[in-house]
Length: 100
Image (cartoon, rainbow, N blue to C red; front, top):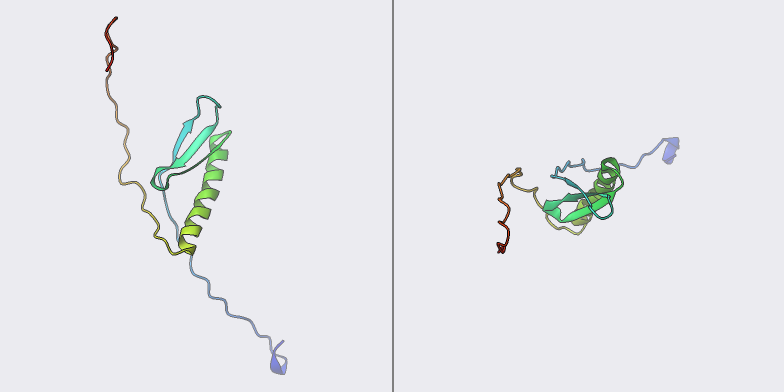
């Protein structure tokens, strides 16, 4: 209570949260079987025993990474420009042929 018995509240200025969206790549590690999750644009990655666990860990790492960049005044890198799946046809080497 403030003077004259009136309630006083402190005004706290809270900036609205900004949503950042990044491309995430999920891969299975052939040796451990773990699911590796990465954000190529930030060179940030983690792993989990499932896609869900890897996603949750990556989301936490991404939030902490971006908060850290903002805290020290560094720019937030943009997401990758374009993603696509590219297929190529590869012929096996003939017997006795040395691959370059």
